[in-house]
Image 1 (tube, rainbow, N blue to C red):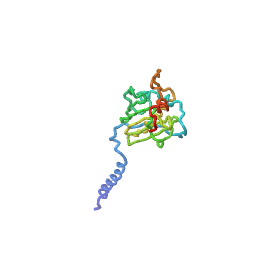
Image 2: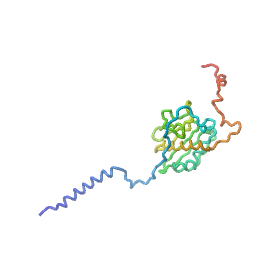
Image 3: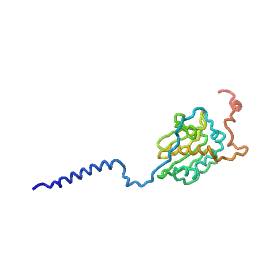
Image 4: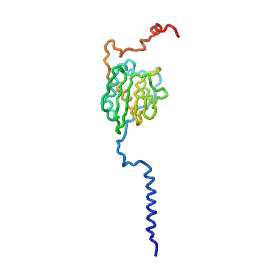
Amino acid sequence: MFPDVRRRRLPKLFLLVTALALPLTACGPDLGKSNFARTTVPAAAGSGQVADGPITDAAVAADVLRTIQPCQFLTKAALGARGLGTVENDPSPSSIAFDTCSNKVKDPGGKEIRFELEIGSTVAPRADKTAGVVGGLPLRVNKTGDTDCTVAAMTALNPDVALTVSVTYTGDPCRPGQAFVDSVVRTLHNSPEKYSTPTGTVLTADPCAMADTAAVTAAVPAAK
C-alpha cells in the first residue's frame, strides 16, 4: 500500500553524484590522456644589485674577449652539463665570424631551444631592460614575442658592449638564456679556451685605434 520510497530516491541520488563530479572534471585536464615528458629548465641567475660606473672586470676587457672561442660554450659537453636537455651535435665554428656561434638543444619534453652567442656584441638590450647582475656584470633581458629572448651580460657601458645570447624557445626563452649566460661568465672567470694569436693576426687588432683623429681628418678634411 505504501509507495516504494527507495525507487524515488535513486534518480535524485544519481543526479546529485553527477552534479558533484562535473565541477571536479572541469577543474583540470584529463591527465590520463597526457603522455608527454615534463618540460623543465634550470632556474637562472640574475639577482643582485647593479654596480654603478664603468666595468673594470679584466676577464671581459675588449682585448681579452677578441681572443675567446665562442663555440666552447655550445659544445655537446658544455650544454649537456647545464641540464637544459639533449644536445645532438657539436657546433660548427664559422670561418668568418670569429665572435659568433650557435647550437640547439631538445628540452625534456622534446621542444627545441636555439642558442646564438655573440661575444662583444654592440646590439644589446637597452639600459631599462637591466634585470640584476651575473658574475658581477649588469644583466639585461629583453623578451620579444612569445618565443624569443635576448639576454646580455654587459662588458662595457657607454658605448654598450655585451656577451649576448639570442634564444628561441616555445617555453620561456629567457630562463634558459639567463642560465646559459651565467655559465658563460663563470667560464670566462676561470680558464676559457682562446684562439692562437700569431704575429699579424687581425684578432687582436683594435678597430677603434685604427680610426684615430689623424686618419679621420685625412679622409674627411671638412666637417661636411
